[in-house]
Length: 265
Image 1 (cartoon, rainbow, N blue to C red):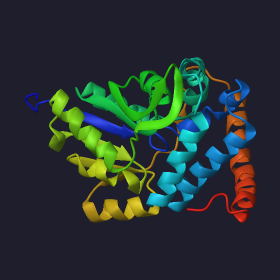
Image 2 (spheres, rainbow, N blue to C red; image 1 turned 180 degrees about the horizontal axis):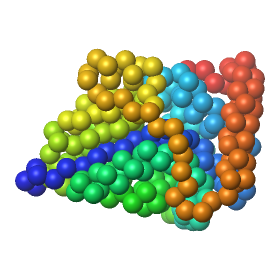
Image 3 (cartoon, rainbow, N blue to C red; image 1 turned 60 degrees about the vertical axis):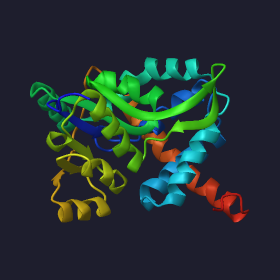
Image 4 (cartoon, rainbow, N blue to C red; image 1 turned 180 degrees about the vertical axis):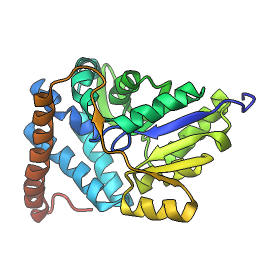
């Protein structure tokens, strides 16, 4: 254990640093590369959509986790990593909030480590963290055997698990959590904000805004995505259109599935 003199700023990723879902952002490229079928894309997007609009109960969380695990089973880990590494600049770069970027830079200038904390897989979070200049990251870990995903999730960085991972990292690095910062949009990350001395709700959902008021957390509004490097506006528009279309199609497709009893509890 360190001398507890170091400090860090912990940032949720989706809708806190970037104005989209990091997992969905790569879905088109994964489909082009033959990993995602249309049905896979619809199932994953639908689970993400329900989770986003429905809050954070255990059933919705389990549904999202299981959809991801089932979808990636059998994928070659190296291929996924290559796709993400090759496309992270063009897919993520244009959707980073300018306010988040300035905040990250300010924390670094003040000598704090910057840690990205996300429920997305490490294969996605690692290159995004590097793009943002983060010190490190905490992400979900997917089991790989013989170079392929088994569908098992070794560590799911969600809810209370984020807070536990932050505390473990603080022990390893010597962070004084009472002097650390945390930022997130969702009530599911309340444990993460509770783990530090300075919590901030960013573009908070209704429950998170209420919690922030009750617990004295700051409330921030991020509105302006900025291009870190040169990126195509047309490409961004295409990605946004694909995401909207996928969610719309998912709603129709999964409604039909549910009517046949295939998506029960």
